[in-house]
Image 1 (cartoon, helix red, strand yellow):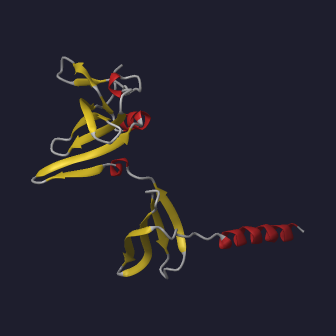
Image 2: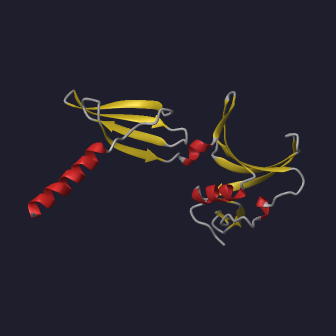
Image 3: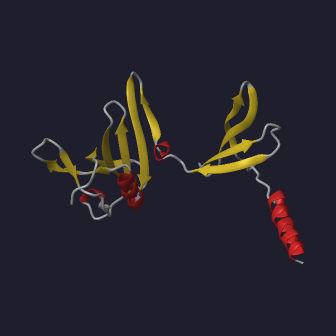
Length: 188
């Protein structure tokens, strides 16, 4: 009786694994296909796909190319969110437009260890405070549409936060800029 129960459970597990189908979504864009070889003989194929959500899907196929053995999803790299702004003859900028979403901007600054300078210490190091929604630079104006844009200068890797105030027709009314620095740790 115990053997029968064992074989029933084993059959259920094997059929469950056999029935498990990994599929690649139809709207996925193939980015790269790589063959892994040993002594010139392919033993594994890796394909990278970009999904509509921006995530990267890694699919690994066996030698025949007919079974997906492993699928891995990778989140969008945080620097891939930005848009390159090219300036002829110059390195240009990388622009991170957060619209009026200050929460996303503050989280991004914390992840990237960016902050508003507080002043310098005796060792000529600049200190920065931990970004918070209560900071003066994140105050919303009641007139017009607020837009926060973080710019990375690709020449010297310096950061600037632009607070753009737009009219209802989309034209820019005013721009306030704040120097942002990268730090190892924050000071309160």
